[in-house]
Length: 507
Ligand code: BYC
Image 1 (cartoon, rainbow, N blue to C red):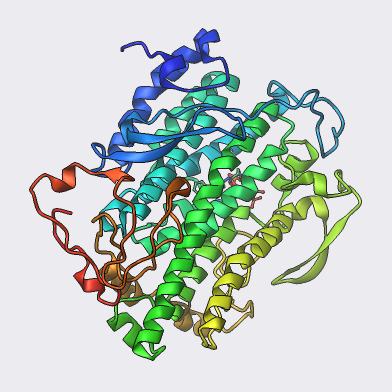
Image 2: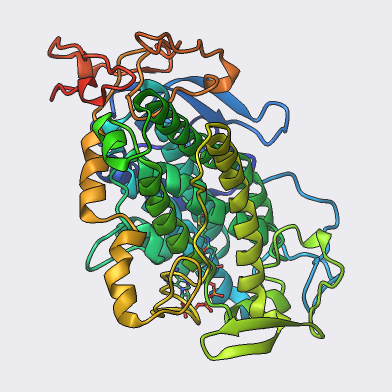
């Protein structure tokens, strides 16, 4: 195996060259990661040069470098946010004691489990999104997808660093397992359910980055409070990158709504069949996608009543997001009134922390909904998009398997079974959405089912779309040699004629 110059190849601020054992462990793991990327990363784009952001430091002013890079050559770095001098534990029974620089023996397996669960989601999402490049609505979107993919790869490196540096042989074995489980694999699936759901169209990608990456934000914020200081510092820096992933989701869905409203205006109709015939996403269809991905992501917070969450908080392993905003950091005296199918009861607050976090998450999710509903209202339509109730379609916790409608009402099981197909995307819905997914990679062009972005990447200007061609300045964001290799060019899509989007098999 050729030696790797870590100072050169892996930007880091953890003094990798100063720790030979760690260096050897990562030397052993790195080729396996690259092989995994080759097999499970974005398919068929290994030769493409992509304008990517790469983390090069933790300096708030200049932490990232932008430039063209082939994804397999991406410099997956290891960065921990700057240490807080004499940091103290900020919650739980050991509050006020010094934060831990090493893993306390009694919490070793729980911390490892938390890190492995977090780490497992990162490569899972890359696997889920593997084929989306073949159906991208524009070069701008394709580049954003790849940015997310390489950063999820970096987040995997972040968790693998912790496993290798602090958990010895067990940690190294877990790091290998992170590459052995695969999203949707019948024998070795990913740990959390949402990360086994296929993401085979871009509407799902925008929903996933809106809802599931937002769960990531909340989980990372709660781990950033951890008494285990290296975990805290790692998660603090990961949050910097996470913001862009949610941006892709929020703006992606905004652009879908905007385009739908344009087509509603052009056709003078809100009839879903007419909107679909004109090549756009009808809003009831979008609502069903929101129902699916929001409900799936709500499961990621765990059970409403959880002894794990109580122990994790009391022991200082996992706090609440932005723990500093609360007054009581011990929570031994508080209760929360929780409604389960068995009725309402007061539950010790420590056991209800998953629910507390889920509620804050839902409030955060509402922000985009409000924005989209304002757009719909301004366009003069009565329909409003909404989030499903936190009880709807749950697989984890007190409401798991309960026949609940999207408004949160318990209904007859038969009614539930019959109605579910109209609450989440049906097979016909998915087939229609897939039919829209024609790859558009001509510089300056955009698929007909989505509006162009307001601005380009890294604050570049994005010229407004022309009536004829939706021109944008995206030509420099990605250079895909493979797609030109047989000399065919792509037909451009037109605003209301999605079927004229590129349909060449070579693209
Ligand atoms: N699916 O007491 P419970 C992200 C398991 S996303 C399957 O209910 P607890 C990202 C649970 O593991 C953020 N299993 O919940 C986003 C436990 O199993 P064990 C990911 C589930 O433990 C986009 C049992 O049920 N980060 O970063 O309080 C792209 C009972 O657990 C599920 C984390 O998850 C489920 N949905 O909390 C890329 C943070 N839910 O231990 C990345 C780390 C629960 O009995 N993980 N279970 O075998 C955690 O903090 C906690 O493990 C959980 C569960 C919040 C997941």
